[in-house]
Image (cartoon, rainbow, N blue to C red; front, side):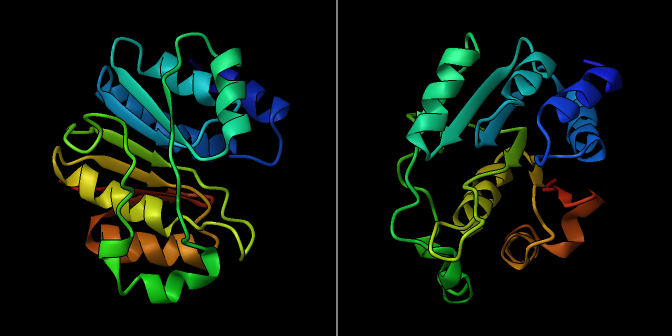
Length: 189
């Protein structure tokens, strides 16, 4: 995958990640590949992550059944597990940040909680409406799972307070590495 291919992806999928955001993740993943990659969320960029991590283990977690079905149909060989964010809603983020025990995703795939993930990308749930699930549960779960192998963790949409503050709270500012647009990179090792 080259920068030109990433530009083509961005042009064909407007309103998602920017070229610089993709490159931030791509460069670290390409350096660590083949590795164990966990991605919260599927989309038209799923093939990018599979191709970059060829020979490694790539697992996607998705809460929107239609998107999971789309990814399974559109992307040969993809492994997508359905997850639920339960009763958590974006408007609850201030309250939930003080209750991390309520934020661990409980329906991870078999072995998901014990796998030492090398790279984790948090790009789900959508988190765009106050009445829908926010990403605080994904970020917290990524922080717990990422500790096992000292993962590189990326959190998208950090222009929004929920993502930005959850990332700083659970991934820690001292572990912040870089930011491109609204994509933040933390290194847990």
